[in-house]
Picture 1: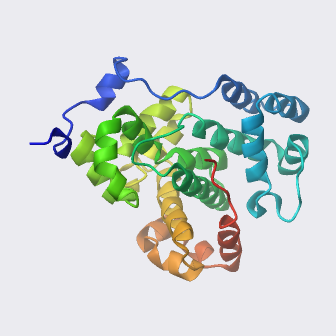
Picture 2 (picture 1 turned 30 degrees about the vertical axis):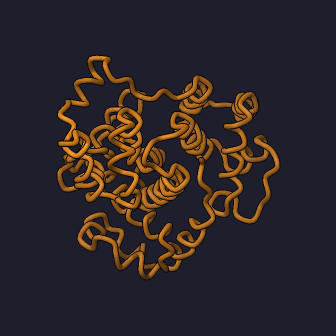
Length: 285
């Protein structure tokens, strides 16, 4: 039997904890920026000066900041302009978004451009929904952005299996993707992604949102983030598929929307407008 056709019998989580399997690292400049942004007295000029030392990161942040979702019709020519217009909170989300993508240069079986486009849309949607619920918008953005990165980590850690088993299945999403991962790797991406963000120092609520993003009902119920991320992932899949907002809303889990008190919002004109703006969000790859 071809061993690539059988599940890889390993305990990925134990291997990570024991140091046998390394997790991706975020560049130091991104770590410093995130640490600075956590301070309530973060100086915008200092943050802009820090960003300009990394031209690749600066270009990615500027590209995202210039999308209609963040800057409207304004054209931002520099990082300082972007910081001044979108503010500290939005900058934090964009730095995280652009910084984590640099940890994955090439991953077997993955179209990185498509992956990061969907991740950015998921993050923006999660942030929007959290703001509507007056929940942790920054945590929702981070959880949405990183919710599927466990799949990248698994494929990067086991390139032969990834190339053999996922090249033909690049369009798998959600529960279908997790089921395939369990068959190939013995673990699914939510658990791996949750472990990674915990190691990176994100709040426990972010890790929990990722761990339960495919099954919000299994979470402890103290935070709406798992449900928000689940809805955001479904919205992002509709955006990248070219669905109309009506078609996208029809595909969402009605019971979950009702439980989150989001049913009326996603059916309103304000959400439809933001949905159209999400189509302008660029990939980070």
